[in-house]
Amino acid sequence: MRHRKNKRKIKGKATTGRENLVYRNLAASLLVNEKVKTTTKKARLVQPLVEKIITISRQSDLSTKRRLHNMLRSKEAEKKVLTELGKKYKDRKGGYTRILKLGCRQGDGAEVVQIELV
View 1 (cartoon, rainbow, N blue to C red):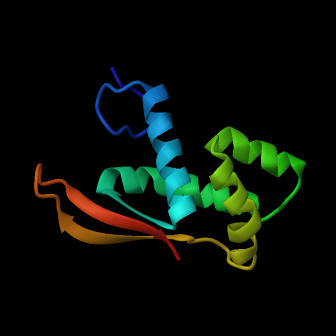
View 2 (view 1 turned 45 degrees about the horizontal axis):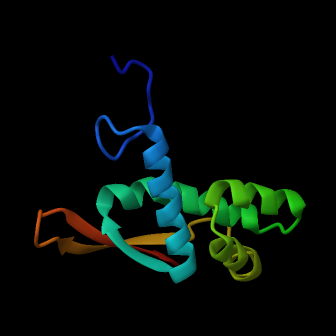
């Protein structure tokens, strides 16, 4: 039974460890490349994580670096977030990402979107 379990999942019975790795890797690649093509469900699940990471990175102190390292585990993404994106979005209150619909994928018909930084 799923009573009182509010967490959304990519697949029905996937383990949470694998899903967290998917979110973490997708967020890191989005922060490094500034836009990524993915399915609608993955984009909607990773969007709050990216928003939280950018909000945290607006401050630059040791605890911020440690929190980002725990969330991302990618040195390239951490460096970019702290040096560029934190300063870029310093005055913005929120809404750092945008999701644009691209259509359906040829092979399986899944909805493909592009998630990008504003």
